[in-house]
Length: 115
Length: 117
Image 1: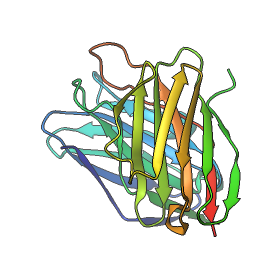
Image 2 (image 1 turned 180 degrees about the horizontal axis):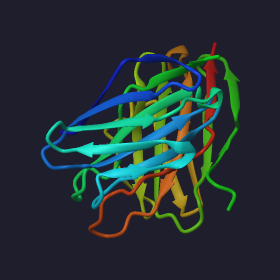
Image 3 (image 1 turned 180 degrees about the vertical axis):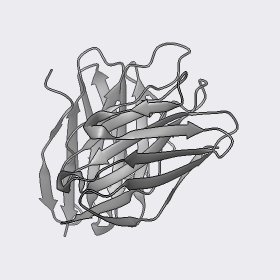
């Protein structure tokens, strides 16, 4: 069975600082990987995804993530945090086969950006 | 494209009452997913449909919960009778799943915040 672990339920950074949100997965085969962002009182919005090909993927709002198979990781980064980045971020996985076709989500990381 | 539309946005009901949540997926999407979000348990998959057929309902908490998808453009999640522990935000999401292909990600609705008092 797949699982997703997000290290750190809360991360606080200063405006302009590097953002690093950690995600590790457990899967018998390399899964498809996703990052979603949730702003207060809203649904989840897709930031970026990795399916196949280039392991460094770029998403919206300046975020990017790198799939590292050897580390079973898919950490989310942004070089310079902006106040508008404050939100909750969810990592998710999907079985690339046809077994479980629903996404499995991590527990989320709430990002605070200090002025 | 209006996105995934959920109604109502907020629902407050008394314990024991029936609650019906509604979802309209994106046109052309063939799969629909219901999730529940709570502080304690995070995002939990309740059920998902493919081509209007329930595929995996193992996440439905108990018999008080039921979901239907009578056609490609509408789904309901019903709780009868409702209990305070059902208070949560319920999300609907849709996607297009091609035969033999994995899930490339969903589009979520804005959710329904349910409070059972």
